Every structure is written in structure tokens, then in C-alpha cells.
Image 1 (tube, one colour):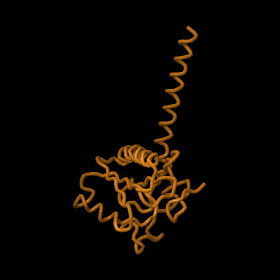
Image 2 (cartoon, helix red, strand yellow):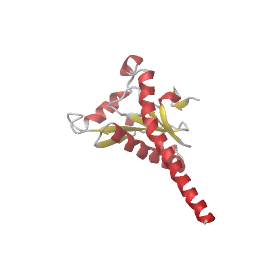
Image 3 (spheres, one colour):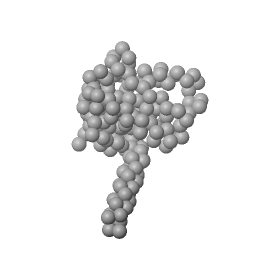
Image 4 (cartoon, one colour):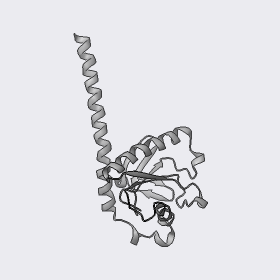
Length: 172
């Protein structure tokens, strides 16, 4: 099953987290290492058109993903960015949050990252010649996916321990 991202179809191999309402994917042309995107599953062009449950899920996923990419890419801070509408620099007509792990000195001026984001999807620079390979993107997604799968295993294990504790209490 592919994921719709505006006018693009996204292969599952580059998606590393999916919830009931959102998904997270690696970026084909990252501004910094670990630059990823979080999007609602429903293709909505503007933030104002999201339902309250979609907004909540989008930002909960953004928080979880931000924590993981900051840790994995040894960041010390995170830039979260959303361009909402063409005058704000939105080029893909689908709400999405850019998550960029940051390090001291990664840009000469801290705010240069916003200039880079503005250039990120301009048509003259947005051609396959500038993109990462599907294999490279899939490999990064696989590594990031593991962070979330480990959490599922941990949660399942904790729930099983709690269930065993309840069963033991009932038997004793």
C-alpha cells in the first residue's frame, strides 16, 4: 500500500511510523542528516482543514519522531517547521511537519536553516538528480522504524507482566 503525499505516491519502504491518522517518512533531499517529515494520512492541503483528532495525532507523532531523530542523529536541538500555504513556501499540497535535528554550528547563522527549507522543494532544484536513492532512503527508514518497533515490544512485555501479576494475585 502506497501513501499519498500531495501529488506524490510514497512507497512503504520509506515510511518508518504509521498511526491511525498520521505517518512519518524519510526525506528524499534532507537539509540536515535526519531531516524527516510527519503527515496526516488524509491528504489535506491546509492545517486549518484538519480535524481536531488529526491535529492531536500529527503533533503527538511529531513529538515522538523528534525525540527519536534527535537521539539517533546526535542532535542537541530540533527545528520543527510547517509551511502552510503557497505564500508560506508550501510546495506539496499536503500538510506536513519538517523535523530537523540540530547541532551547534550546523549553519553559519542559525536562521539559515529557514532559507534552506525555502529552497528545499523549488522545482529547479527538485529533480531526481538531487534526490537520495530509494535504497538509501529505505535503509534509513528501517533504522528509524526499529526505534518504534522496540517500543512496541517493550509495551507488550510490560502489559504481559502486568497481566501475569493480576493472574498471580487471582490464583493466590
